[in-house]
Amino acid sequence: MREYPKRLEAAGIDKLRLFELSYICKQYRANKRKIERARAGIVDRRKGSGAWHQPDPTGNAAINIAAMPEARRVRMIEQAAAEVAPPSIAEAIIVSACDGVPYEKMRKRPPCGRNQFYTMRMDFFIRLDGMLWESEQRRD
Image 1 (tube, rainbow, N blue to C red):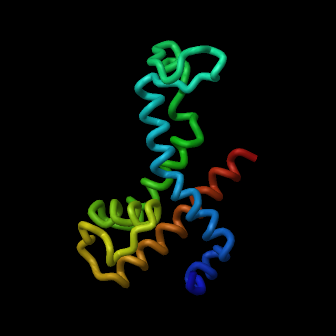
Image 2 (image 1 turned 45 degrees about the vertical axis):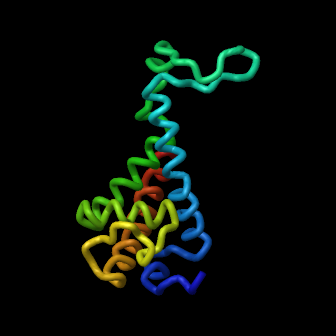
């Protein structure tokens, strides 16, 4: 990985924090699947219960999706992307940051240049860092 830009350094994001933010983004798709499964009432049970992945309306009602940490992180990622870029570019930022697809290899390129895209992606990581920091401060 190249040296992280001075703009990230000025925002207080060092190399290790950038890796942490990237790791959180890499979990985006798995977290999204987990939320969809919870909405559908599919609850993973332990092996001893004998039933795996069966719809469970009671369990679905018991799961408060808004309180799931996975749902909170998915919302933060989507909100951070929406705040730094227009909708057409925000989706590309999520694909780039979460799936690791570089600008040059995107199937549908965003309507902006490469430098503009990576500047918005950097702003996305700065905004995501701020949102995560705020949520950690509220929990304390």
